[in-house]
Image (tube, rainbow, N blue to C red; front, side):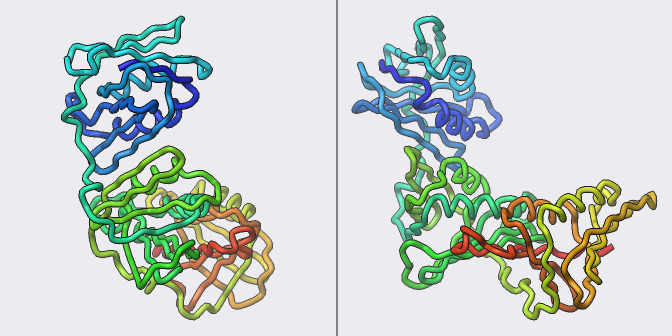
Length: 381
């Protein structure tokens, strides 16, 4: 195998692919710790898997001889990252990895590396191609990237609640609703699809799949297709091909936690409130990180207290003269929600009795076709 290519054309995609391999099994002999390099018909395809996700990227190269080999992902990434991005890099492996002692020579003219390779013959093939496609969701990639950005942080990372460790997608005709939750807070986003589906459809992406999609998607109006089989999802975009296992479990009826009868809708400046919460949270209890919020008489009063009875208070003016609303919320949860939104003002909505806070943008702005809602459960002190 012999080919050459400008480093700038593939180094960033290679880093994404190596990151997939680097989270594979701890056993250093595990074949999935490697990246497959396949040269064929004037293109280089780089591919890696961790058995739950497979990611590949294809780029044109100047080919002398086709071939396919395995290279340890961490070693390939570390060597190439030391080279100037303007480099023209040549790769030569004489026997295409059939011999476990074969070396891949990587050279820029000034710098040369010789890296051990192995045969790609037994590298696992992701099984997405062996199942029939049941459904296809088409959506603008920029819009889907914003959906992931605004909801990923709410996904649970606790292993004992597997059903919350993913991003739930539910489609009814042309309406896509996305849910993420860790049991204490929830993101709910709604948008219209490019192509309506016949009937209803629900599926749950695993968290690593959603995180990887965020990395490879771009802020453009180009439509991508997510193809779903019974157990997997796959998509092709921006030179990447991503395949991932799905989270197969019953997702709870999270719509039931939405407040039904809003008694108070209070508009506050998003940036100012985020700042005030950060100030007061310094002395909050480390166990619950709670900040008490009292909306009343034109002011928002904030207060925190820890186990040593140290207290922090602050006050910010708001345009509200209605029924007082008193709730204690986790400061980190509130600030993560406020950070995920990009509007100037947000609305805190409360029903009675107050069991949670519904937070929405005061104005969706340029994202008027993407409706965002967050629910944060109150802290019981």
